[in-house]
Length: 170
Image 1: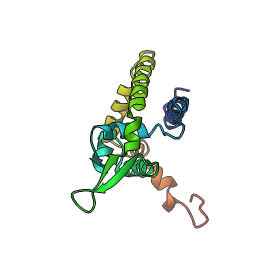
Image 2 (image 1 turned 120 degrees about the vertical axis):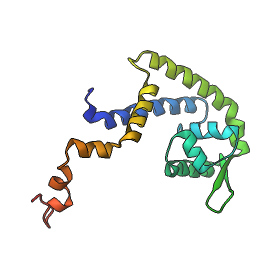
Image 3 (image 1 turned 45 degrees about the horizontal axis):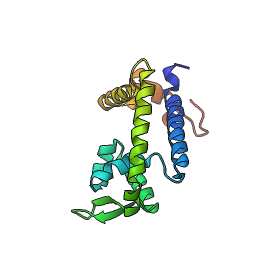
Image 4 (image 1 turned 135 degrees about the vertical axis):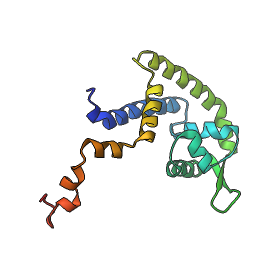
């Protein structure tokens, strides 16, 4: 199944397999409650506290995604939120409980990085490089723009204005 038509589905499947395997390792370490998506955030925060905006940029996600993950870190008592320089900014800081986890997390991170380099060595091109290339390509021109260029009549033919009151295409 190498067709680009299923790229999103295949990427979700790959992510599920990667995150599932890392979650199994956390379970083996007695950290079954620890979510793999916490890893990048805790790594970034282990150096020093950051605003949610800075954290989102460092991790490479949207502000909304970072805010949601930070909310879960706070709920799980791994992070706290403090007021920032202005009313809109919030600073995220690791709790002592999260800091106590750092030695085991650092060991897991190192082992996971070695395993990722190993699997990338089996590929025709390093996946991490291809993912960065894809993100850069979509930054230059979004997928929405590309779909529109692939079929400029798509929306006018099939969108809401092309349907009658019953929802059928005119």
